[in-house]
Image 1 (cartoon, rainbow, N blue to C red):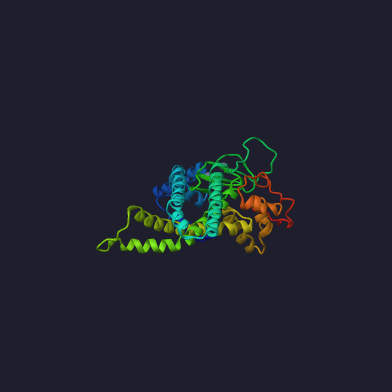
Image 2 (image 1 turned 90 degrees about the vertical axis):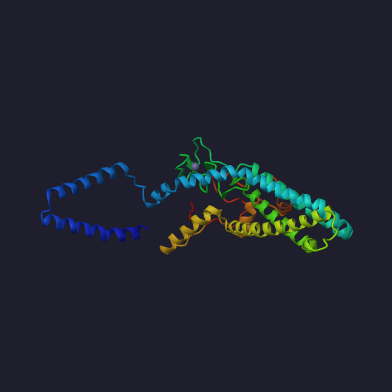
Length: 361
Ligand SMILES: [Zn+2]
Ligand SMILES: [Zn+2]
């Protein structure tokens, strides 16, 4: 950006100097010379008043877009409650349809072992969705201390004017710094950070699993209900009772909602799984990409210091220390805390792969 600007400004300055030199040689009128001098004096005064060594075209663009950022931040902040209510209402509607419409059909048509399997799996899935969503919205993501500490900090937050530990970023919607910030999630009305990142990911994963289960499980019922819906406009109209009509419409709604959420949330879950496998957060993904390009232009290789290898990254993220933890901490609801305090990033003792030496900020 800078080199392109100097490319454009260089010839322009040269032209201006030549014009001024020519003007002096031809003895330009005193009024014009006076105007040029005043123009130069005014420019120096303005620059000296507005001078900032950190200023640049990026600062000007940021300042120009400040009202837009302010509006977006406030809309997300106030609509967060609406989004959370929407998640609760839509999930509850699917559960209600499953109990009122799907369960009576299953009880009449499926065998007992099949009914038992569906009963156990669906309730296990539902408990994990509710648990992780509740934990994700109620657990604070973690904030750096605002008192004086001896902790190693990377920089100072320009908004909070407090030291920022490594992996901490400022959330403009929460208006404070967040430890190991991933992103601000409007569906949780909360920031995703060090203490609730696992809950967020587990919620996405189990919600996707639940939606895939509902879409595949209700496929035959959906086809029958959709075919019945298409006969509604026939003459004479089919003799369906009110309850049957409601069941048809509910099954079509269930299938369309679950398959769309499975696709959208599934894609988001896969993306976050890739980031976790690399030991990166969503914000670090952009920072590390830039750093990778910067170092590669100098012939160096960038290595993420928080990447312990795919399996160890998952173990650290999920808080799995022993084999039993895969069952008790991943497949069952668990409120264990993540490793570390979110301010210092020494690798856990069970991580074998040493972190790389180049630091990412
Ligand atoms: Zn801050
Ligand atoms: Zn936030």
